[in-house]
Image 1 (tube, rainbow, N blue to C red):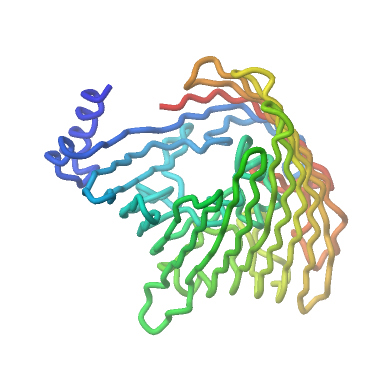
Image 2 (image 1 turned 120 degrees about the vertical axis):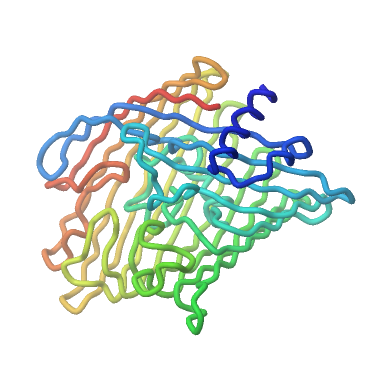
Length: 387
């Protein structure tokens, strides 16, 4: 397998796809990896009609990447990771058409302190708090919170970032990130910063996180996030939350997560398009409970429910929509690398006044468009292979 990896990497380097010296392979540990996730999904109501479609990467995200590490001595290691996201059904690149749009970073790891990396990376909320949610752990997009408003499904990707992750001390891990605007004279326009901490000890895992994006991506698209990287177009996006997972037994785990999202001067979202009246203020409160049971090493089932309350304020008026999200998943491993899974998601939305349209409609993350009614149901069956 090691010799095969070297041949693949040599071919990529010789075509210019990977700008890494070939002679470095003899010194570094370099791994080629990826995920292929292809399924069929039924959605009950998409703009008034049911839909059956093929899906790509609904749970894992179709990807391939390279990661490597080199021992520098003295307890230090150099590392890198580049990861491509693509649509299996069309062959198109995801993440705004970037070659390595999922991740692209280089850094140094210290045995004594932690890891410092620079580039395009996942934020601290995704790393620390996301794994306590259903969609950020054992499920995927269909079981996300409404519009993925709190980024636990990793809608936001961060460019121009510097991130530090500490080693684990007495069960605690800490993480911090700062992402630059990269614009002269606009230091605060489209920058991002975040902090997170996690405590894990035996059956209990607890985490908390804070994330803030300042500035509008429409005026500085080359900063921390771009329109293709974020789920909302707003002047400021502030997210914080906390959660706990508890292992009742070696097979059963339950969890509770709360997150709050506060947006100002919102134009729209990739999930509901442009608002009829831009919101001076838009807030979300998400309450999730989840449970997972491992029936056998190769088979598990999971359930989740999220209740989301929103507060919308604009020149045209105010609204307080809310949603109930139910999700379930079963997964069976055919081998260590190949599995089949089924996900069912149901969402019910409240009535929303016309001035707040389309905010408040039923629209599951991972479906093509909002429902014409207050309800939307999706059923997905998928086949996945990891390499």
